[in-house]
Image (cartoon, rainbow, N blue to C red; front, side, top):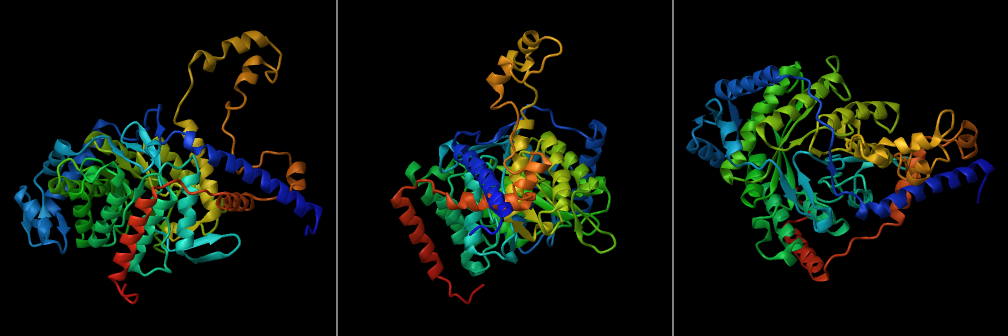
Length: 520
């Protein structure tokens, strides 16, 4: 029952926006599987400045060192390669890490998707956008903030699959806390494989869970041969340093599992500057590079040629409360510097996203996210985690925020193509045809190009005030709420071989049976 004309109009307006978004979702199979940038990356340091950061990173590695905690095998590997190992402290001769990485790490690599049309290239000049990662809470307008569930996890996998603006299914899109920790990785990896056919990320909470990921990936790609993973990368996984200057046993063990299987790792120091690194941009960049160099060198020693991505996640903090802050200028400068350093090293780069400290999809969320996402794109980032959904410093993922961020991702996809200088792009014939003083609305060039001339937002309202009021005066989160609901209601799973699906489910059931429900 419609209680008022405004409510009826609001539903009609929301329906139009939702249908528009759905049409875009249906077209995703025909969109580019990743972005190819024409624009040159923006630089904030010259050769002298970048060389200084590299020199300082080598000084940290040589004089201060990195702790490799709780993993004797890694200490043996590094010592045999020429590092100075005393207890768990490892010091690297100047230039050692760089030399190891540049000798074998690929500049560009392919992550194969279950659907070959969704396979991505990682490295320059490509950009791959992936959704939020790691949030224990979810939020939407209907239910507010709550712990994430497996249903939420699958919902976000489905939304990421449906949109043309994300190229990757991601990893721990949210934490399904209704499943025990020792079992939930099986449900998450299966969900990525079954409910999407885009590339995905693996579990990193324990080496055994990384092995489960590899085994599930082998099953998922078994139709391409039993040894397909030996020379094809199908899994990408996030390996975080325990900053400052520590690699712990869990991350080292997980990185080893994936490297041995020829699967890719994101070697990413996670730094809150002022708490986990110096307060300065240059100091944070040098420490980030040192930690990443040590991690990537370790991976190359485990298996030369295993794909690695240099990751950087640097945020500032409030010096009054200690709370993480986002969208501030200093982390943007770190991002630009680290992107340039990755290019100089010759490996792909990961950073950025639509990051904010806002609790809801409000104005703070919008401007802080834009202040992070614009440098992400301008810096030439190759893999963008947290491109959609991030709220509350990463503690929450928002359904409405997810949809609003997708709009920004879509605009970035147009922007990175740069300026069309073809004959059609120059449009001189249109100007000749029109002459002075005439509008271009009826021009033959306009009529030929109008459908694709400008990016069309699925969430923004560009109508007059009167039309907006008549349509229900909906704000952007309300419009986004209708869109994600429509997308999920009309979701259709990608096809999968029934035999492969059966084998996946059998593996999940067997592994779950090995753990009592009380275990965590």
